[in-house]
Image (tube, rainbow, N blue to C red; front, top):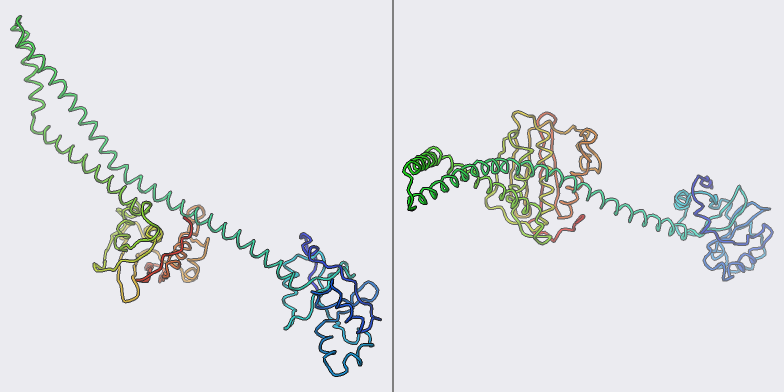
Length: 433
């Protein structure tokens, strides 16, 4: 059998090499059987047979057992040369071959049951033996190590995507907070000006009282002071000014309440102060998501809500489900045109499932891309505008909750995502806290 050729890789097979003294072509079957009985050869399935320095075949325990179990088998075959029972096409592996290539080659040529180990060669000459199960075990260890590294990388990528989503979310919330904060500050500045006028008026009135109670009364100074107080009082008592001040207070309180609502919704969206899983209404999750995504959808999308008022609660990880909803709503907002964009949000339930429908009238997804949208790193966005992990992570989150995401799309007409979660669900496995 043709062996895998050497490659530029570390000599991993050298650690598996066994220094087994080969049999000569002139050795007898009895000698081969006695060699198998040596303690050093207890794990070997076959012995190499050489001519000069080159391997010409192997003789296996399996073959000897089959022969010796026959009636008078040892008497008939014991004195014959090993070449009469040898396998002339042994498994050959170049000592410098990569471990993966060697394992692939050996695994592809092993029979059932496994009766052969493999020969190690160096430039065509015999270099030792290798045990097949040791080779497969070494490959398994390497695969396990690679899997651990892959899981660690996946966790890092998931965390990176969550941080990217968090950055976008915080940027949107910051923009939403900045607007009411701006007019709250402006109103406070205006009210401060009125306050200073009031302080000035109060000071002048206090001075007038002092003059009226003084033993030395200057009538001219008193008249001038009364005039100043009347002027300041008339300015502060102006009906338009008083109404404007009331409006400033009302707008300031409204702005403060808006900021409070944003902070509360942000807290509810992330659920940082709650247990990892909780019973929540997906209607509430959608509303919290819309608050967080408001900067992306306002003035661009007509929102159509069709919520099931009797929607049952779902036990889930609210922060993870909110992340899924935010990813899909944000993608929808980015896909719709600047004018005439619509976003339908619908919830429903049956005996087994609670579903969320998110449908837009955007540009849609090409048929050749539809089957790949949940693949890690797949994105149709320009370079630098998407990691290709948002939908992949969303898919993993929903699957971890025992649910599924289905998508239908037609180019030029829009896309619909349907998120299905079981009504009774065990606590979901967290992806990356």
